[in-house]
Image (tube, rainbow over all chains, first blue to last red; front, side, top):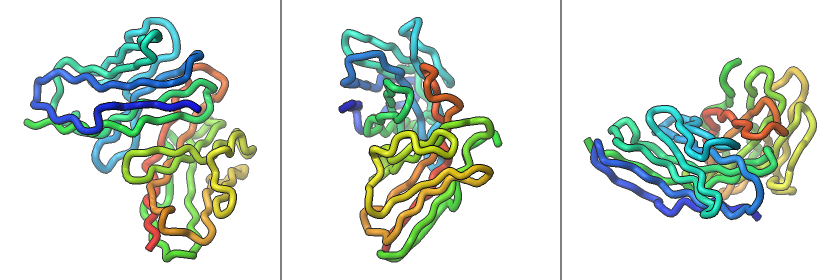
Amino acid sequence: AQSVSQHNHHVILSEAASLELGCNYSYGGTVNLFWYVQYPGQHLQLLLKYFSGDPLVKGIKGFEAEFIKSKFSFNLRKPSVQWSDTAEYFCAVTHTGNQFYFGTGTSLTVIP
Amino acid sequence: GEEVAQTPKHLVRGEGQKAKLYCAPIKGHSYVFWYQQVLKNEFKFLISFQNENVFDETGMPKERFSAKCLPNSPCSLEIQATKLEDSAVYFCASSQWQGARGETQYFGPGTRLLVL
């Protein structure tokens, strides 16, 4: 069965610090990869996605992620976080185009 | 509509009562997905539809959960005889296609079900 691991459960950063959130998946075939964000009291929003092409994907709000096939990873990065980035971040994987397999999420708190 | 709509926003039920949740997908989207988020973080896939047809129901608890997507009506997820462990946020998502690679699922705001 597919599994998605997000090793950082809680991350606390000061504003302007750099961010990297890990995501690893277990499926060995072709995958589609997503990062979603859930701001407090809001629903999931798509940050970025990868399905083919350049493994370095740029998303909204200055986020980017790099797909490294050999490491089964799709880590999320942002060079300089802001207080407004405080949220839950979820990595998701699909390989059939059907159901998403989600990681358990990473809670990011940015201190002003 | 341009967003996935879910109603109600909050639902409180006593143990053993029925709960019914509704989802209106984005107009033009053919696929609808239901997920259960327990303990704030863990998402569990329940069921998906292609239009009014069940596409994948591998995540559905067989006994008390049922779901429908009927033409010209919101999709629904029904829980008969709710249990305490059914307390969760239930998210609906929709996508335009299923077969296309990289197809994004757009999520609704969720229905928070509390079983007392």
